[in-house]
Amino acid sequence: MRLFGEAAPLLAESGVDLAVLADLEATVARSAGLPDGPRADIHVHLGRDRDGHVLGAEELIDDMDRWGIGRAAVFALNDPGPEGDFTDANAAVAGGAARTGARLVPFCRVDPHRNAAAAIARAEAAGARGLKLHPVAQHFTPEAPAVIACVARATDLGWPVLVHAGYGARPLVPALSLLADAVPGARLILAHGARGDARAVRTALARHPGVWFDTSLAALVDLVDLPPERLIFGSDRPYGDYATGLQLVGCAARVGGWSAVQLLGVMSANFAALVEA
Amino acid sequence: MRPTDALRLVAALGAIEMALVRRDEVAGPLLAQAARAAAGTPVDSWLAEAARLTRAPEFFGGAPAQAARRKVVQALCRASAQAVQALLLQETA
Image (cartoon, rainbow over the protein chains, first blue to last red):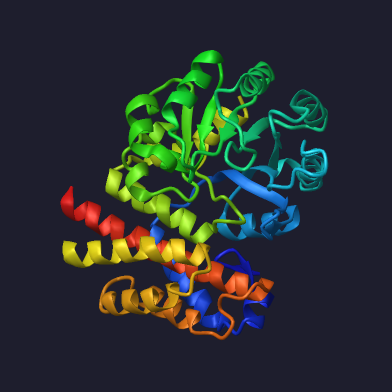
């Protein structure tokens, strides 16, 4: 059992009153006001991060069952390993997905400057269906030739590419525009509602045919500024949690005046169109 | 909720989020202030509990239990910020 994404035994050890916290989590969830229906999560990390965050496939499935999440795209935390190419972390993600049936869709995480072509080939053989890039954690620029090569290979494989677009100092639009133009068929999912450069991204890329946005740990003001047809629910587990992640989408739907069809798209249909295409 | 009250909370919660991530002890007093500012609003109970949780010994410690407790405080602050922002956006729409 987890509350706000954290393991109850750990919280109890820290002296938290679990009953009080469970009540508060329930009020957050109720405040989302989301209808029943299919839900899918485009942004989940598995494994162990350098910063101490941990999540296993079985724990994730428990969370998904509790919150009505049918499927999730999963990829490695920031655990590149001694060679820096995420070999072990990607293999662990693929293994976790294989153990839990078809509910977890493995993505391959790479450092474009560290044996990325081989990493993508290994991940493809292990069943990967998407690519995850984190320009801040792996210290690369999205428009670098090595990145374009990774995105081109992923696009050839029919994979969507999820790109971190949250906290970071660099402007996002010039780099992502170059990347999108360099690989015309690419399907880029900008994480966190592109909060790292939201206003510029909304102006330049919100209606680009190859660009989507996930809602994970996004800012509400950014989500209501983006077309819901381009949004995909994401939690960023284990950094985010399902109670507040769903509440965020519920708030955006109310403020943005989304239709039932638009909400269904954000919660599941857009995921299916990208991941299962 | 009056727009001025909502803005006060939104500004405070942004600062608190960053302080929590950086394990900056200023998060405790800031949360206590935010909880007082939220009294009687829809996020009253969430921020009251978040402020109470920060008063634990070793709240900023490095053990997994302390990290989990901080993550819960972050979640309660996030829920509060989102709810207040929604009220503000609906008010100004």
